[in-house]
Image (tube, rainbow, N blue to C red):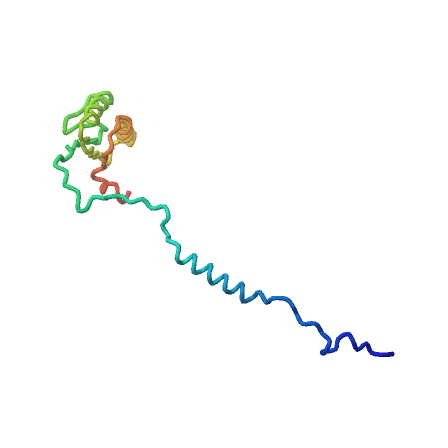
Length: 143
């Protein structure tokens, strides 16, 4: 049995002709990162000329309309009792038609029915009144 001397010996081996691509990939990744960093972030920005300073105060103060609901669920408009829901809605329609809508302050009594309060809120919403507030809600704490 003889040894095959031509194969596997160090003297007759062919040189490796492949290119080592690891440094090439490293250089390309560094170039890619540098490209990403140097690209401006806001490519689609819109320039707006915004006003500077504080806006002028409004000279027109809204009127305050006080709606009270007493313990017998009678609705009062500015201290005057209303005949019914139709009169309440007529007054709310007039208030909603004003140039500057009034603030509506609703003050229900603790003993009044919730249904009456809900009717007042629904009427205000239907007529388009935007500025509503419930006054005296501290009387309901602790029930």
